[in-house]
Amino acid sequence: MICIIGLCSVIDLWGVAKRYVNNDLSYQTQMEALPSQSQAETMLYNEIQAKKPAHYRVYNMAVNTFNETNTSYFFPSIGGYHAAKLQRYQDIIDFYFTNTSYKQNDIQDTALLAKNQLRQVYYQASQMPNFPMPNMGVLNMLDTRYVIINQQAFIENTEACGAAWFVNNIKWVNNADEEILALDNFNPKQTIIIDKQFSDVVKANEIKADTTSKVVFVNDDVDNPEKRVYKVSTKTPQLLVFSEIYYKDSWHCYLDGKEVPYFRANYVLRAMNVPAGEHTVEFVCQSSTIKTGGIINLIGSVLLVLLLVGALASPYLKKKFCSKEKIQ
Image 1 (cartoon, rainbow, N blue to C red):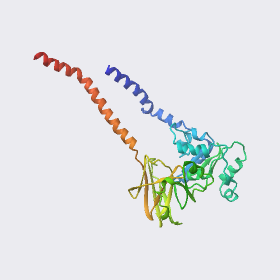
Image 2 (image 1 turned 45 degrees about the horizontal axis):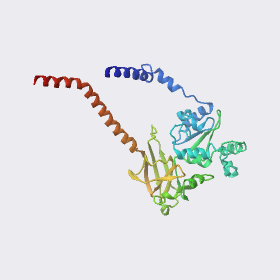
Image 3 (image 1 turned 60 degrees about the vertical axis):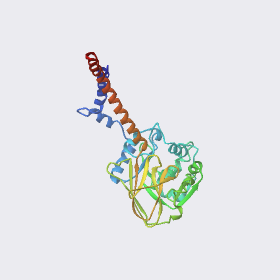
Image 4 (image 1 turned 135 degrees about the vertical axis):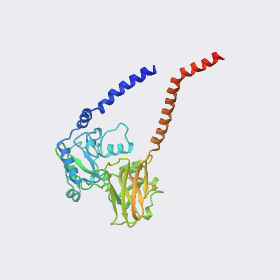
């Protein structure tokens, strides 16, 4: 029975595996060719290849942004689909991206309109009924540098904040409701929104403005999604905001190799205190759940192997012991 089950399993797995790994790689080539690009996506892809920005994200309005995966195949996207969603990010989507009743007040600011073509497009579209007006402040803090308007055109957002930036003005809020509402008509480069529960971590009294401060995102060749590295230079203690989702259960922050605390900002992002000087900041994904699960999986595999060995050896051992008993 064991041999029959094993043979059936091998035949089944072999057939599936051969679809992905075979001699001529025809299936693999076919799978890689499946995603297609619109004219706008092709134009954007060529521009990114030419400019090679260290960090950026794309908002594709030409598709069902938060229920498709094609865009994410080619670009870092603020959209996409996953069955298990982060609740706070979903709140941002529901409040400020798909909410047709939301209208941003400062979209009519003539000074801002003159500097950003994307605002001009949104201003014209805001006159249309039931148009889902995205929150420019949220777009900027997510480093949404490119917005695909339709199948033929994209626009560069000149207000995107980048991978990380310094902020000196703190707006304290009492709870999650106040925190998400405070994102309306705010400038993420000037203001950071922090829940009072993090008041013990935030060293607000030490913060001093320094216009010469610099932060550079270090992008490795493989763009490892489980590690983010930043080079920081500042003459005074500063608050540093990162365009990355806050998830304290898996992500750990290191300052010059030493683990340090960080906190949530702007409802979904990460932020931390940075002392004066030259520093290297690293965020590393180290999930204790995955580690524990791996150990449990290993123990289970060992027990399964021992059980199989015992099952195979059982008839031989029974025969051997029975023979000894007859002789005695």
